[in-house]
Structures are given as C-alpha cells and as structure tokens.
Length: 411
Image 1 (cartoon, rainbow, N blue to C red):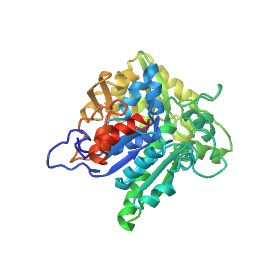
Image 2 (spheres, rainbow, N blue to C red; image 1 turned 180 degrees about the vertical axis):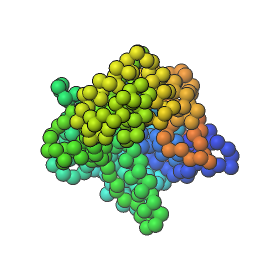
Image 3 (tube, rainbow, N blue to C red; image 1 turned 45 degrees about the horizontal axis):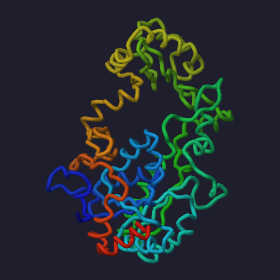
Image 4 (cartoon, rainbow, N blue to C red; image 1 turned 180 degrees about the horizontal axis):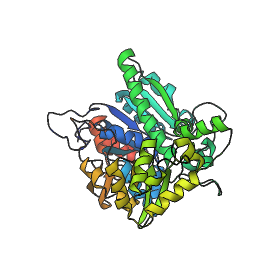
C-alpha cells in the first residue's frame, strides 16, 4: 500500500472533496499524550502521519499492558501508519534521515537534548531538509532554569499554579481531573505546526518551532490571576465558585439525581432565576440586585439556589433554566458523555471496530471543516504494522534490505 493521503487517512466524505492537509507528510516520534494528540489532529485532517516507535513500542503502548492505556492509545492514534525504528543504531538514524528528506514535518516530545544526543536533533535534520518543520513539545521548553525538569501532567499542574487554585478553600490543593497540561500542550503544538507551515509557504524555509506545556496553560488561569492582582490573595481556592469570585451565582448545585451548574453572568439572569424559583419578593432586595452585592452575600445566594435545585432532577433543572435563558448545564458522568447524542450527531464521537479491542468509541478532531466533515477514523495498528509499506513502498527499501534491517534489530 502506498503512503498517500487520504488513502491511509480514513474514508473521504466524497471523491470530489480534498482533505485539508492532504499531501502533508508528518514523521511522528511522539509518546504518551501531548505530541500524539497533535499528530492525531493532523492525521484526521488528512495528513499522512507515520508513527515511529522504538522496537518495544512507545511509552503509552507499553503501559497498555495494564488495561486502560490501551484504550487511550487507540483513541490517540487513528489514521496513522506504524513503523518501528531503533534510533540507537546508525542504520536507524540513516533511515530516519531518509524519511525526513521526503517529509514536511517531524514532531517529537522528548526531553530537550535527547534527539541531539542521538545525532538526529533539529540542526542535523534541518541541514538535510531545510523545508522541514521540526516541532518539539516539552514540559518547560528548550531553555530556562526548568529546562531539565522531568515533566508529567501532575508536575506541570503543580508548578504552573493550577493546583494551588484547584479545590476547596478549607482543604488541600488538588489536581484537575483531566490531563489538561498534556492536551493543552498538544493543541498548542498543532497550532505551532500549522503556523510554521504557513511561514514556510511565504519564505520557503522550515525551521524549529517549540511549545512548552508549562507555558501553554498560563492563560487558562485568567480569572484567578485577575483576582490575585486585584486583591493580593495568593493561592485562593474557590471550589466550584468563580475563580475570581466576581460572579454569583456561579456554582454546582446538588439535585435529586446528581448536580447542575448554574451561572448568572448578568443581573438579568438573576432576575429570571428568581422568578423561576418563585422568589419575586427578592427582586428588589439590595443584597442581591447587582453582581457586586450578590458576591458580597455569596453564601446566601448559594443557599437560595441549592434549596431550589435539591428536590428536582438535574435534567429538569437544566431544561427549566434553558427555557428562560439562564446559563446552566447538568453535570454529566463520563458514561453519559461517551453516549452523548450531540457528540455523535456531529461526528466528534464515532464507534469503530478495533482489531484488538473490538467495538470502541473514539474521538475525532475538534476542528470541523464544513465541506470535509469528519470521516470515519481508521483504527490504530499493532506495533510495526506498516514497516513494509513505509520502508518498502514509500522509501524504496528492498525486501532483502528490510529483512537484513530486521535481523540487525534496526526495525
């Protein structure tokens, strides 16, 4: 099978529709979450993504032996081709160089300096192919005092300030539930790749582009930073209340069968909520009339709303609030989210048959092109599945040479 898009990039919407990134060739040396998420989005947009793994497999594939990570690996590697390559062997480095000669992008998220120590760092590869976009994601970047720090999502959450503002004020800091630093890094890496490609269109040259997970999450704390600069209070944890304590009600309230989030961004929202709660008697109460007053009496506000939501179902509360235009949402469980009809109708979630895991639900890219849609993803593959296609059909390695490389532990 030739390495061409959209042939290895899923089922096209229609023969006349070109995938947005069709023809782009990406060498994916990523592992775990950040870089693989970026390359997944590139693949689902039509790029030819060749995932290069060490002979034992990348970290997430190895971890999949314990169960859960096998689903994570499958969800992150739709539409990719899979090859093995030993970069500690000179012939492995030579093969990578030959791939880079024909590629547009190389993506990796090793600790800074790892690729240089293998003699396949950005300088060496850009000398071979000056049009190459070499995209690197790391925990803290290629420079600065934190450059050598080990980076996991938890450690980034800790050092970035995220943990200090997450949790309830009378308890210890806690991590955010999802791996927000990994995936924020991945999303920014995707943007970095496309930005660099746009520059290449104008200048004809590629180059090194990097993102830091640490830096990618700073902007997410805007409300909290605003409160810090305004009050000087450091490490303020507000639970489910607004991070800047500048909106009320803004909280998660218990219902009969779960929880519902309710936000009154404006005084008009509050008036509508009071009427819905049957508390028109409070419409002129100076404690609650404007946002500033409601924030000053936030405990009373939350008590009023909580008393109203408690006997109702979460969907009932949501529908009543939605009908009058008050921002709200039921708190869905993961099980509910994986069956969300909205995500299925838009094609963001799709059920596919996976060769190892059976029928599973996989996410698509959040980026939706109206004329291209979200074609059915191609399942992730076993380790080294596409060695013959990539090295043989695409790169021109003869069957005899490929057999020799296998016996030497290069692929």
